Length: 153
Image 1 (cartoon, rainbow, N blue to C red):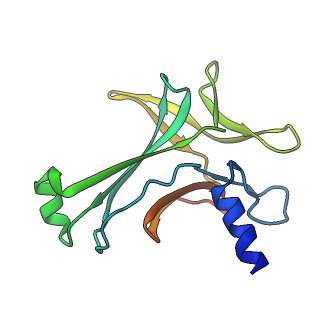
Image 2: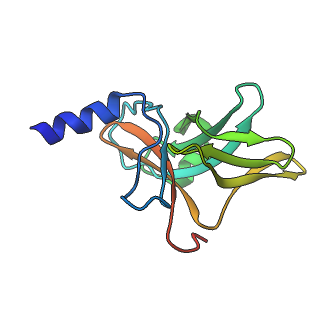
């Protein structure tokens, strides 16, 4: 029962950076947002997109799921799509270099990616050793940005 209590404290607490392992080079940044999903269908994830919000000064994830079993129907009729927005408030932007980073528990700046300018605005490009993970589980959407041991793409 103590392990369950610890898990609940971490899930409910305001921690946004949780270690992935004892190795100091690994990291895991979790979004504090947990938007609820009110349906219990097998709808597919349609898209996920990281963007820097200038107005909020935060890294934001927009993830869309079909709220029906048919992905084709959802693409045709956008009312069959549920979109969720999650934030990563501990990620910072160095405007002079367009570098995205966070500060670890030892005060070090850890690079996770950069902003790349394009025709439709800026897009987030994660470093090769960093991956985004967003999932719908147990009635909520969760998201994390974590280091990986090799190139993630």
